[in-house]
Amino acid sequence: MRKLAAGNWKMNGSPMSLTEVTLLVKEHPAPRCEMLLCPPATLIAQMAWHVRGAALKVGGQDCHTAASGAHTGDISAQMLADAGAAYVILGHSERRADHGETDALVRAKAEAAWDAGLTAILCLGETGAQRDAGTTLRVVGEQLAGSVPDGATAANTVIAYEPVWAIGTGRTPTLDEIAEVHGFLRAALAKRFGAEAAEMRLLYGGSVKPSNAAEIFAVPDVDGALVGGASLKAADFGAIVAALSA
Ligand code: PEP
Image (tube, protein in one colour):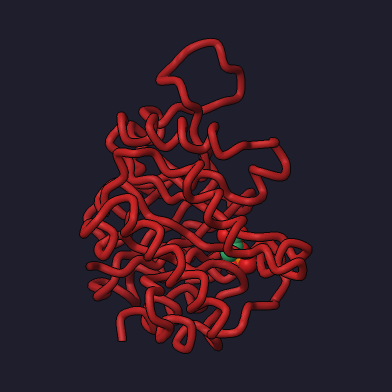
């Protein structure tokens, strides 16, 4: 399995930000893990052109379920692929919260992503209240069952466990808590997809930074990270890539 360091720029970045990308690929020309950045849609084509031939893949942050049509403001998976994307993040908690995305919608988007040849990074995770109530495993189990389509394989799907309360807060679960959720997700995937589950990448996301990356990557069943804030700077994201490549 090739581990994955994925960066989510969210609604940040401008053409000027490509200087960070230049630095990143210069410092990490041949990482042992897969390296991915998901900029806002406006930068995908430019970034993909900028890094052509380099060991950096580019992805989107969302897609529509339809291939084309009367959906003002939306972007189809095929359009992301045409722009040079290889991946798309789906069901991020910010989209679930800001746009009311349900598991069923995320599942349909994943199928659209596959149809366009993209790998879907499917996000799930509990809120702080759900963790406090002791329902974390039930919540992520339901999200996994509802968001992941039946045709999932290690090639077309990546799962990202992102506790909502850890995103952008500087707070992270304990290593034991991460291990518990990732072990649970691996077992749930194995029950549904058999041997394929061992090859499916499970990312941890939520306040990953250079100072905690190595200890998080040492947790069993953590196969990489989905990184928000720390993916905006080449030095920070590069240090995370280096920790995953160690
Ligand atoms: C994210 O939004 O996917 C994320 C993990 O953000 P951050 O790393 O900033 O917590």
